[in-house]
Image (cartoon, rainbow, N blue to C red):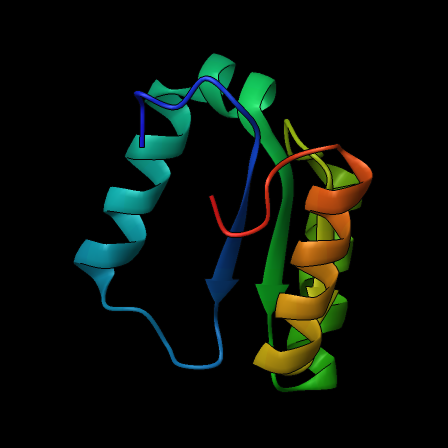
Length: 96
């Protein structure tokens, strides 16, 4: 991932509760590589099945903005569509 020189989209599925180790590892990775993510992440799409979780993610993003644009979808199919549209709009190669 860190060898990439072009933009990419991350899809983060939060429909299932992450284990503590996964959650803390993701936080450490994001914090350690913020400059890289800020430069290369075209969009981060969160997949959250419940309206309450989607609302909580949106509220968190207002209180502590992410270093890259985000979108929040309720299912994986719209998340993939959103991701591909973001790559196309950014002039990136689909699926690269």
